[in-house]
Length: 353
Image 1 (cartoon, rainbow, N blue to C red):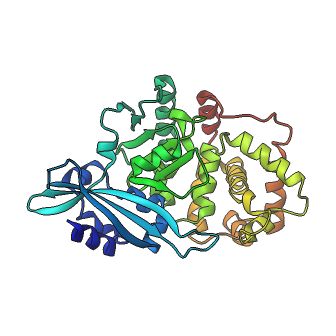
Image 2 (image 1 turned 60 degrees about the vertical axis):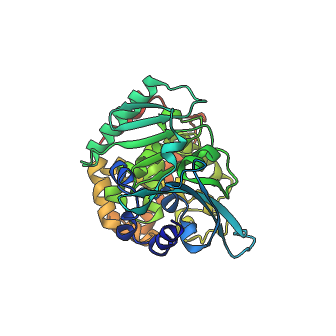
Image 3 (image 1 turned 90 degrees about the horizontal axis):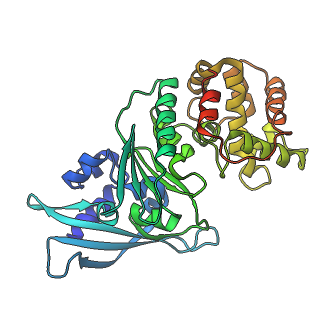
């Protein structure tokens, strides 16, 4: 039983080999049952130490729960103790296999299928059916806009905070400074919505899952930029995100798109990178709608872009791109700060392409 888990850890980075270690039920439920690896990838680069192996039910030796801690180098940037993972190991057809604890963790939770989304609702929360229907329609519309034909359901865990999301994911705890937020596992088609400002409509994380067929393996600029653009972030839709970006840049007149793109993550420009990417996607959409966005994604490739490579992908010179990008950002300066837009407004805006 312990050997099965040890063997899994040796092949965990191989998406093909690791699948065979999971139970039949887990493999039928999701394309990739390893929620922790996709969301908290540092576990594959850390030292794994098994600290506990106990029967799930006392006296039943056919199902065990194993707890493993992950230990890093112990630097200031990455403290030594990173996370504790909980996994079930069960006997199936003469061998030990892994069983994800999410099934046991969410037993008795409300489940509602709305369009492509399978909502799994924490008992502490109320389910807003109207908001869920708007979100499901938005998912359908967005898939159509970008030629996404994958009709497999998206499992959407609606939880009150990140610790609750971690427990469903299979972590007793994980190192984080946040109490709310979102997580997405695009391979498994799973969303963890742990921010009450979004509830049933965590569109940023849904974008990561929905557009994975065309953004998988792309740069963070692309993956996060298009999620900021389509789904908002930090409790706000795109207008609020870019309004905040405009205010941020007004206070830092020496920072422009080139500086943001060349930043190594250590300066004031770092926090502006993904909102700036969203502004680039808005610029592209204004120039040519959804067709231009799809062509832009193809032209960018997989590497993190520079101002020069972005300009080439758009058939522009860098100075022209910088100027038009600034015009997009400044168009949001005079907007009143806002939170999430109503679903109908979001859909009407999305239909422009």
